[in-house]
Structure formats: structure tokens, C-alpha cells
Length: 137
Image (cartoon, rainbow, N blue to C red; front, side):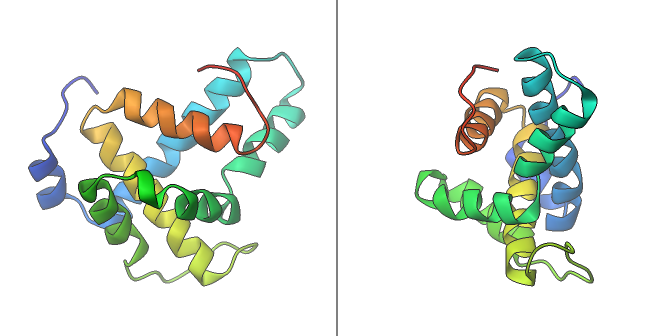
């Protein structure tokens, strides 16, 4: 994807769940890339490190902890994802945790579509560091 969308285009065209669908992949890719760039280990060890971070419970805690650092627009996007109707939830998380994680994923979908790479990297590093890792992207 080479062309970024405006905030208005993203608001108009995409629902919270659609943004979360994209954001889930964006977060997963960024975190997997981080671990590959910062260590050489077996695939199972990468998987354990990544899944410890990209699970609903972990994402929910992180989402709660960054609320005061989000812009008003980012808070709107987060709420749009969090408050969307869901028909399922993660097997190892409560519905509330799942909704908060969905809000965080929606935020990442929004940041990706609007080309806010530095903001995504900053948040991903904070998320990874909240799990005891301390390297750069």
C-alpha cells in the first residue's frame, strides 16, 4: 500500500471491526518483525514471545495504560473499535478484555491507513517494552 488515506476517509469508509481486522495483522507483523530483527531463535520461541504480547488480555491492559497518551482522534477510533457489536470473543479473555483489544487493533488499523508509521512504531515499542523487551525496531 503506497497511498495514505485522510482521517476523514478512514472515518467515512471503515467500521471499527474493519479497522480492527487490519490492525490485528499490522500489530502481529510489527511485533514478529521486532523479534526477528532482535534475536535468532527457534520458531516456537518466537511464537511464544509474540503470542504473549498479541493476546487479548495483554492488549487490553496496554490499551488501558495508554489512554492518557492518545489524541482525541485516537480515542475516538479506539472507542469505535471497542464499542462495536461482537459475536465472539477470545477463549482466554473476558468479553471486556476482548473489546478493549479490539479497540487497540482498530487504532492500529487507523494509524496504518493514515500512514502514521512513527506513531505505530512508538506504540509497538511501548507494548513490547511492557513485556520486558528493550530493543529498537
